Image (cartoon, rainbow, N blue to C red; front, side):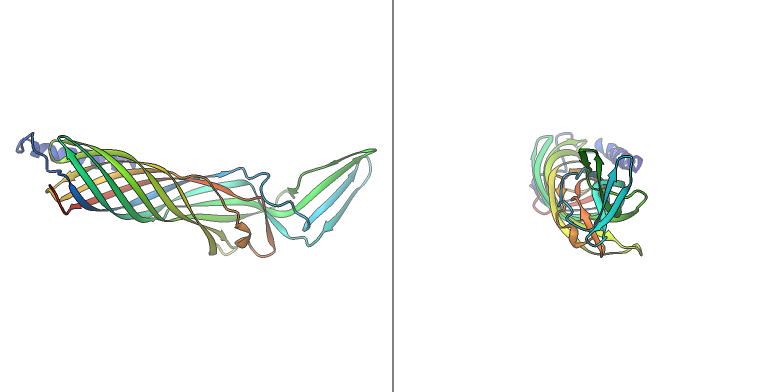
Length: 290
């Protein structure tokens, strides 16, 4: 897909070069004004599940207590109901998935000779997602007795347990981008700029049939960077390509207990951090070119 992105940029440069000799070097199709913008393409989520050890409540019941006497026997008994636990202290696997992305926006732009500067606000949907797997099973705690000494272990899951999957979906997003551009051969604008992005996310649990139901929603935000180029067909209409990178802050999903399966409890609290890559085709229409 990166090859396609490079090909589109080379294509725009090639088209504009055939027309550059017919236009004045002191005149640019791009002008100052207010424009509406639209973008369509795909997005890729890159998720990292942070270590959640030490978070969440310490189990008061629902686990197996093992007392092991050195050079003697092991005594085991249940404390409360033997529910299963989802261990959020460590993710077994993370699979990132692509999604369809689109946005609409407004661009205010000022032309200064061969340079442009402006601000753009966009709102749209980014449907990339990530699937995480967490160990699930019965919890136990072991006490070791050795004469007058004893040792109590941390809580741990019994080995060879199953995996419970969760999906983190990106939903709506909004961003404010500050653009700084350079005009090439009258019809081409190359721009880049920083910004801030807000992303709506939904965390769902995958049941045994592979479907999701319910979910917990949160809004995360973080800095971003946009890089792209536009080709102007007229003073009003331009077509281009754009790449956006969003570095979203990490979020603690402390309401995870509301979406885990029945007769299952969460141990720890998941901490998730997402970075998004967006590859877009863009269209701009300038209402008040000056």
